Image 1 (cartoon, rainbow, N blue to C red):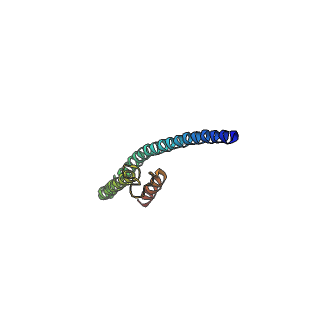
Image 2 (cartoon, helix red, strand yellow; image 1 turned 90 degrees about the vertical axis):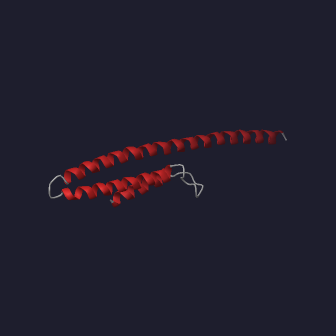
Image 3 (tube, helix red, strand yellow; image 1 turned 45 degrees about the vertical axis):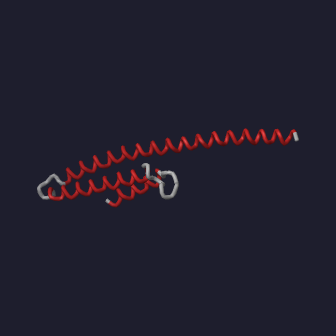
Length: 118
């Protein structure tokens, strides 16, 4: 009976340590999601800034100037789609239908695919 008591005490101590570790892992995943979300914003800013500069340079001549407005329209539409993907993938509505937590890596893959299309 004494051995069973010690075994239960050891099992309870292990369960408490496991719960602590799992809560810390959850905190790390939250931090990972927040950092990746911030990285999306910085990367998008750099991408669109460079895209606008390149588009302006490539359409600076009289011959190519008419293409400037459509290019800027496509970039604006793409930026809007990106913000929507990020908002749905990482925002408050993320995983509402499935009950799953937001998946920053899936959002990143979708953004990469969207940028490759344009």
